[in-house]
Figure 1 (cartoon, helix red, strand yellow):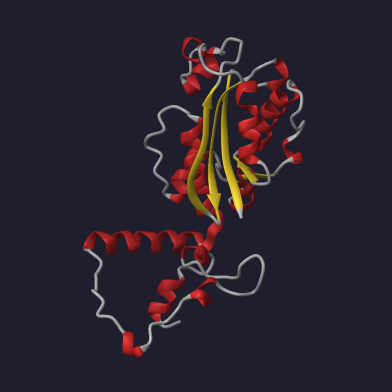
Figure 2 (tube, rainbow, N blue to C red):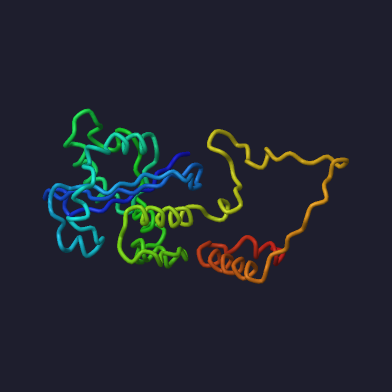
Amino acid sequence: MRQIVLDTETTGLEAGQGHRIIEIGAVELLDRRLSGRHFHHYLNPERPVDPGAFAVHGLSDSFLADKPRFGDIAQELVSFIQDAELIIHNAAFDVSFLEQELRRLSGLPRTLRDICTITDSLVLARQKHPGQKNSLDALCRRYHVDNSARTLHGALLDAEILADVYLLMTGGQTALFELGATQDSGQTRNEQVQRIKDEKRLSLRVIRASDSEHLAHERMLDLLDRQAREGSVWRRLEAGD
């Protein structure tokens, strides 16, 4: 399963008013794990940045003046996201800008859905937490994701943070322990474990958790108690339920 978590920064709020993309950041997930591959470019929008937008992301006209134009990196972007599930927070905003940029060029797909599927993590968050704030910052607080480096919005940083939030929001406790069936069959991943024969048993070093690791473990269980309907499975097992 290949997923791309993506974010953009723009010159303003309305693609229909001629505003343009000035930064694209995306990170790749393979089977719900960060692969280490990412896509990131600053772009020359060929128009001024609105003061209100500058206050959000801090990207100035002078900084963007020598950056590539969208057409210079469009094929690279299409290749990176093709055939993936694209995960975007408030997808309608970013998609409208990306598709406007694509329509300016020939020989490329007109819509993103021609090459990938799109999942809006804001819609998922509203379904999971109705009546609550579901901005990226609010979700970071809810899921204890560190966004202390986020003094201004930045597309790549926001994509990395959103990836962490998305995995916590959609994973559940089974994902933490890598249980469950694969997409193609009912087999579980642990069926591939090979056991050591008795005559070849090794003397293994026992590494015990430190006090700080015990504390971090308890904090994670507290988080699961708050998020899971029936509480933490681990604590239920410890209690003998």
